[in-house]
Picture (tube, rainbow over the protein chains, first blue to last red):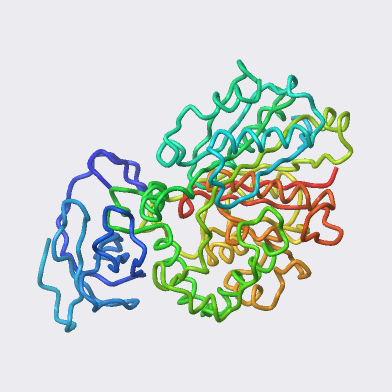
Amino acid sequence: MARGDVCPICGRSDLEPHEIAGEGRVIVWTTIHVPPTRYADEAPYTVAIVELEAGLRTMGRLTGNAGRELGAHVRLRRVDPDRGPMFEAVESDAPRAESL
Amino acid sequence: MRDVSIAGVGSTSFGKLPDNGIVELATQACRAALDDSGIPRERVQALYLGNFIGERLADQGALAPIVARRLGLDGIPATKVEAACASGGIALRHGYLTVTAGIHDVVLVAGVEKMSNISTGDVTAALATAGDEWLEMRTGLTFPGAFAMVMQAHMARYSTSREQIAAVSVKNHDNGAVNPKAQFRKPTTIDQVVNSRFVAEPLRLFDCPPISDGAAAAVVCTADIARRYTSRGVRILASGQGSGPVALSGMDDLTSFPATVRAASEAFGQAGLAPGEIDVAELHDCFTIAELVATEDLGLVARGDSGRAAEAGETAVDGRLPVNPSGGLIAKGHPVGASGVGQVYDLALQLRGEAANQVAGARIGLAHSMGGCGAAATVHILARD
């Protein structure tokens, strides 16, 4: 969703940004071994669909080797200007602390 | 609405065709379809040409007018249709719609792609334009990666096994081995599939189609005109089309594509047929898992049962429901803009009783083409006239 989009549920277009804590669970993941040319030097790397609070789903990179399992607890580390959301596994299932 | 037939079909071989450019490939397929139909080219009133990435991989836009001119059809409306890998299926649908609506009597439908002279990284990047760049593809997701996620979701939800999914590749390679137009003419084994190298985990090389060149074409006209020129016409009983989320993160269920479900519902409704009445199907097996999901979305097997059905041989040429007797995209090849028309080429041969992997007594066939990871889909139901 971006500013100006229409809400798929209520049809309104006066949407506003809303801050959320950047933690969630891995819905599915894949490790890319054959990359597109622009990321040729980065493969293998892992991409995952993460479900954040309130059921919001987003695609992002999963950095490091941990978290490659369904339901893994991950948190947003940063938003890369080219690659978008970069997640990392939360090593211990500590209470949610970090926010966007 | 008028009854519509396919009076003739043509196809190049699919594979690495270094001697042919994109225009030559399309022209060859169109000439072959016209010859097959017996209809003189002067009667062709419009061209619909499916092509996905010709601008990017073959540096050629305005493809439809170029092909029309090469065919000696200067002046006719010539339209390129693009919806990723469903481009060919949607080109056929547009041809069908103009004839059934009475706008044209005879049209040429074709699909073409030229890919094999480009590096795998650049082809991967070009195909990825069928995804949502901002929301997803910029992360480095690829199309094999997208379907790897679908595969993982199907395995988790329905306990579909790695071997069941590999059975699709083995079946389609077996079928391709006897198709003279196919890119892969060699059988494979479950062991080879599950031990081939990873493209995007858990998806492996033998779960994927090759990078291909090729073109296919069909002459679409009123059933009356078809009967005047040929005794081998194939009726188009129904045409359905749907769209769905381009982004995977927007899918409610990663194991089903609403675009296919919608296109199928429309097509079965038009034809007044049920999935159980289909004798043979050419489905969009852009990856092994895609064939399994398609058989479920089309209602040919029950939800979650596709892996078992494939492993049990139900979708083999001699099975309960033969799927992709041509070898499918996996073995026949996947020149992406051509594939939707290529399926119709093979299906027409099946319904005429002329196919290499002939399904005994095939009378009603279904073609399913899909673009993106469920962004667009078409379903056509054909019948022996």
